[in-house]
Image 1 (cartoon, one colour):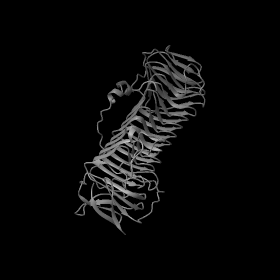
Image 2: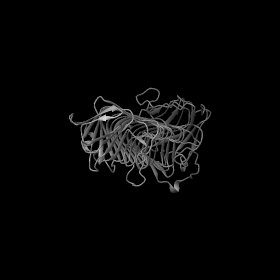
Image 3: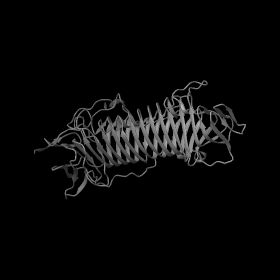
Length: 515
């Protein structure tokens, strides 16, 4: 087999002619950082949380009362009795199946309501607490819970309780408001407690909040024809277990009137989301500081139109069009696993413009082009462990890419207009470990960096070990992709620019200077 050096702009290309095939039918790559066939022998990766200077912190996001789940057992009791209810307090008005709470206080609800509503219509300064203690409410044509007026409402799921809210499949107007959720709130709303709540929305949304929506505890199962959770100003989650099966977005936040609102802030909780559209969507920003996420989406796994920042947590996107998407994406900690039919991580762009960025450092010295003159997106990776199988580009920065820490592994297809790296202006690496395998057709390597990079053309089948050894034969790094590949890009702090190393792909090898 003939090995020859192919000079290109900022990398070395090593051609292993005739090795393997370029079939990419197996798209179930996985990372095994503990050893075995898919091992990374590098010490530079880290999943430790890194503090990020967000404009708002957890102290800003949650009040002390958001987590307060205690209540007096002598509080006002509302007993639901099928077609009506009973209550001794004059703060509660009962009209058949319509129960209206008119004042501040704590209200303990229990029993079943076959076709009715709980309405909160209090003073605009009131902060009533509704305790669900084994409640089942169905509304045939509206919202089982309708919060019309108050300053803020707290819904507490009593310890050990099982609660269910269901809409009958249609929403008929009862006032000037477009009620379109099983829980519909015009005011701030907090869910807490340790019980469970099941929400079924065969039409429209599960939970709708026209203000700030907060979760600090509880177990939630939401099935909806449209968005699982839909809020105007924000969704803020510090704890809880949420399982969402949505016909549109799993969590959707959008505010068209205030440029500072419409964000998602997650500081903990466990999420299982299966959505026809985005798993988590914000028209502003998504901040993830912790939590465990399993997301299968028909579009983006997590989407923030302006900013997406992940500092900690375990994010598994098992199905998506694009895994992570925002104008500016920052990953500083946590573990992220992405399966995508297009780009793994995409800064700006989207369905219509993804993958159209310039190719300034193409293998073989190809010409740049595309959107570079107008691109201002960014991908910044300072920490964390990232693995992706992307059938489109791995890291697609319609702007610039910066890697300074963590471990990033990209596995992509070997054919088509795809690349391990796709950026418009620059891609720099100053720390951390990067391993990428994929196509050569539109391949780019890093444009600059303080540590060495090895970039080669090498066609091989899945299961072929790749790696780098130093002049003493010591293996510095290795990885075994589960899919076929046509090129390899590796950078690690162990590689010094200008120093020669041996890169091997299966039984083939070549020695070149790191660039």
